Amino acid sequence: MVTHMNMNITGIKIRKLFTEGRLKAIVSITLGDFLAVHDIKVIQGPTRLFVAMPSRRDESGVFRDIVHPISASGRQELESRILQEYEVFRDAQQELPPAEPAVSFRFEQPVI
Image (cartoon, rainbow, N blue to C red; front, top):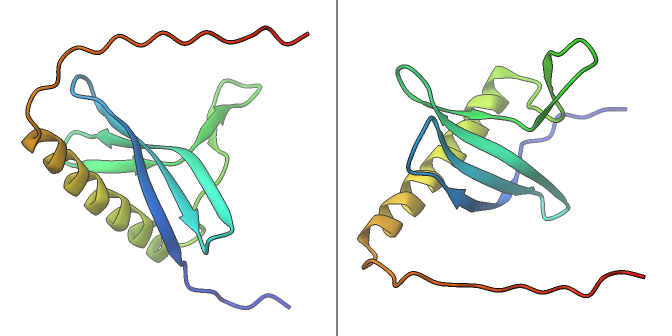
């Protein structure tokens, strides 16, 4: 038996911000403290920001969502929460003083 559950978004993490182009952010969410969804994109459309779910190209070259809300209300709730968190995070980043350029070196041992 399948019962209707309300979406319980327990975490939203803005993983990366972009200042140029239509792609504005890469986001991960946690649902109910038991399921993580990565590679959600915040994109600037012609009239507004929108959320694109993780997708992959199928054998015919069409991009298909890997995971997505199954109702319009679920999509609206998810998009609203992600965009709200994106705007708060973006605004907080803009208020920070400019950082010194950082140089990071990461060396990994080869796996044998």
